[in-house]
Amino acid sequence: MELTSGFRQLVAEAESRVEAIAVTDLLKESQRQERLFIDLRDIRELWREGTIPGSIHVPRGMLEFWIDPESPYFHKAFADPKPLLLFCNKGWRSALAADVCLRMGIENVRHLAGGFDAWVAAGGAVVKKEKR
Image (cartoon, rainbow, N blue to C red; front, top):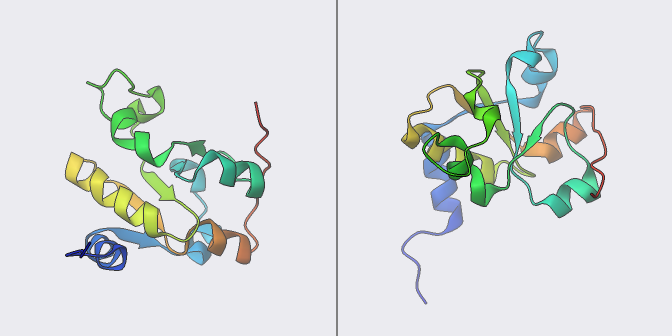
């Protein structure tokens, strides 16, 4: 199988269209509560590593369905007009997902540069995610 575009190219293209926010800026930001933090990682990553306090877990494969009010899977969290901040572990999935959000018409979306790994490395708070 020969690919016409690899993941690195797709991520780079998404990053050229999507605004990223640096962890250092986010940690200093006084109005962090004004954003809806969306954790796109697999649930096993959350169980293993924890998550950013106050974030909502949205499996990456369900994002488009949870956002769209016409979808039977629409999630009430997206009825809130807060700006979205998407994150994953390194910032790759969140860049791709934020690009999809832009294509869906959500203009107030950013992704966390460096993802959860950068958040933890900068000393950002982490809460455990318990298995249900």
